[in-house]
Length: 78
Image (cartoon, rainbow, N blue to C red; front, side, top):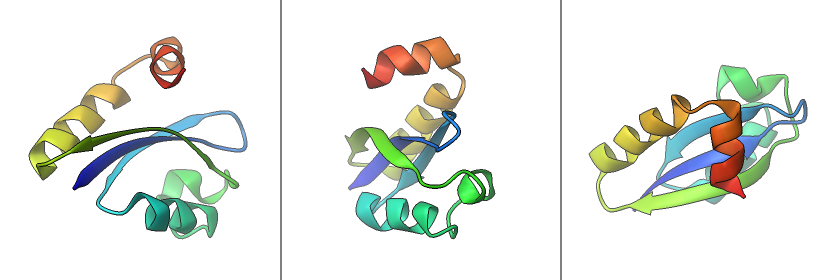
């Protein structure tokens, strides 16, 4: 399965990503081994996930979420 996720960083910002293993990826972000964006913003909290059968569908959705405004992302995760 392919997952799109939204993390809330320690500074209150959101990070959206794609993975095949959510638990491992969140651990990587928390350990400072994830994306460059999250390295200085730990700890992170998993706020939202969506699951897809295909990588292309998940990556398309990741792009869509990244285009949302902060207010739209807040509505999505609540």
